[in-house]
Amino acid sequence: MKIKILLLHIGIGILTFYLAILFIPGVSVKGDFQSSLKILFFAGIVLGLVNYFLKPIIDLITAPIRILTFGVFGLIINMSIIWFIDILFSQLIMTGITPLFYTGILICFLNFFASKIK
Image: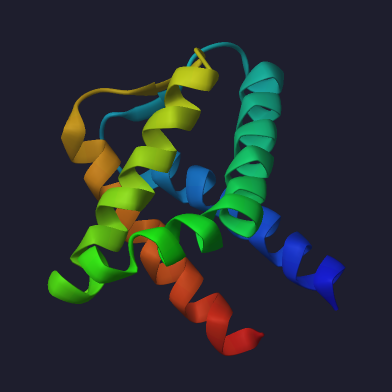
């Protein structure tokens, strides 16, 4: 059961970056097609692993702030995670805070729908 949830998080991570590259202006991957797929795949894996292992701990620590902001701080946490992955993978390009914001919203929506599947 835990493996299924981990694979779901990894799939959501890959899907998030794929949809962000397709639909959000300012998000791109430099390089040829094959290297772009590799970066997309590995960045999605890292996003899925962070969401599976670290995000519950971060959510627990920031629970009071999330309650005070009615959950909006969760979007800031998602944006921070994406920013970390953007720094980690230099071929992944996000120009400005607007792509981070929209990609964070995309993660929120995909995680919401995935929580209904679990």
